[in-house]
Image (cartoon, rainbow, N blue to C red):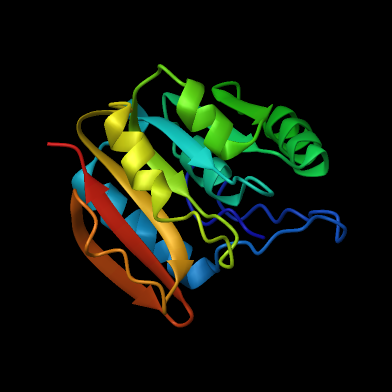
Length: 178
């Protein structure tokens, strides 16, 4: 996994092979961050990374000086790797927390500018995420929820949806807080 831009651009990170993850590809990640950089000043954002895994997306936001990055994953090895890596890279605004994502979403009272979720593709509960986020008013005005999912899954029928981008077997569905 490689950090593609920002103050840590080019750093290659090697996650332990025992972690149960499927990191976002560099091509999809570059496309995602091009979209975000054309719509937001990344250094002003508070970000929530759900199903953070190795922290791949969290590191990209941190490398671009996001104001705050909260990374949620339930796997202890993933959280340990994120904590060690963010400390090694000096990402002081990044926090990794071990918690079930759905429990977190039900209990959370914070608001974010960007919420990114990359759940396991086989997880049947992915369509519940937008409902939880918007019912709990977790996005600041103008904020986006972005879900990475298998291309065969369609989320365009859900409230607040505004766009889908496809990258091979992966898609990003975008939702916006009015």
